[in-house]
Every structure is written in structure tokens, then in C-alpha cells.
Length: 156
Image (cartoon, rainbow, N blue to C red; front, side, top):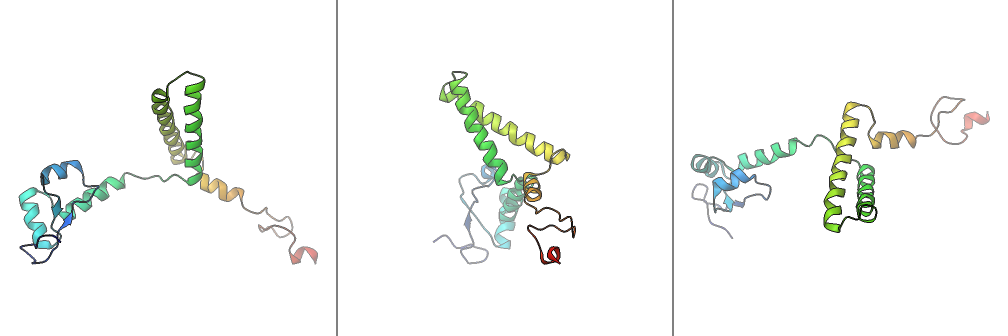
């Protein structure tokens, strides 16, 4: 149970979202709740400079920067490469775990960035596109459609 809002006489307060940007958390100080009703939000915006809707908008802005989604195949390959790189740093280069782990993770991010750049530039198709094309049935010499095996029209 939380406090009643003096504007709407309901318990309209919610906890600040976990993703709330640092500059907004500083503005709210020690407060951990925020009003969600229009009047309560107007009061907070005048007092603190932000309201619940502003917080949600800021959170969404932060998510907008994500323009590229990696396929599962890409992530599996990169993670596999990262583990191999970690082992190589230890066995070949004689690195300790504390040295090998950051180096391997750094190489993982470089690999992800390289994949993203190649796809965005159009030099390489996304792994999902390539996988879909590879799993397509062959084009039939007889009917010029994609399918596996003999169809009825081949026997006629």
C-alpha cells in the first residue's frame, strides 16, 4: 500500500522504473515513487522538472538507438568465437583469466560491430536471409518452381 495522491485521491504512485536515466534519478533525489495521474504529473514536472510520462519517453529514446538486431545464429557464433578466444589467450598467450576475459569480450564486441557494419553496408546479407535462401528447395528444371522431389507433373 502506498500513499494517496492529493490530486486524484487514489494510490496513483508507482516506483521509478528501473531503466530511469541517471539525470532524472538525481532530480528526484531520495524519492522512489512518481505520480501517474495528470494533475500529479503536472505538479512533479513543475517541482522536479520531470514527470512519469517524461521518464517513459526518456527510456524509449534510449531504446531508439538500437537499430540492429542480431540473429541467434550470429550470437551463437560470436559467443563460440569468444570462448575460443578466451582459451587461446590463456593457452597460447599465457594470459591469466583476469587478462583473458576482458580481451575475449573486447574481441566479441568487435566481431558484433563488424557483422553489423557489413550487413548495414550491404556487403553481406543478414545471416537469417542467407539461412532462408540456403534452406530453399531447388528450382525445378521442368516447371521452374521451387520444390523437393518429383511432383505429379513430372510423371506425366
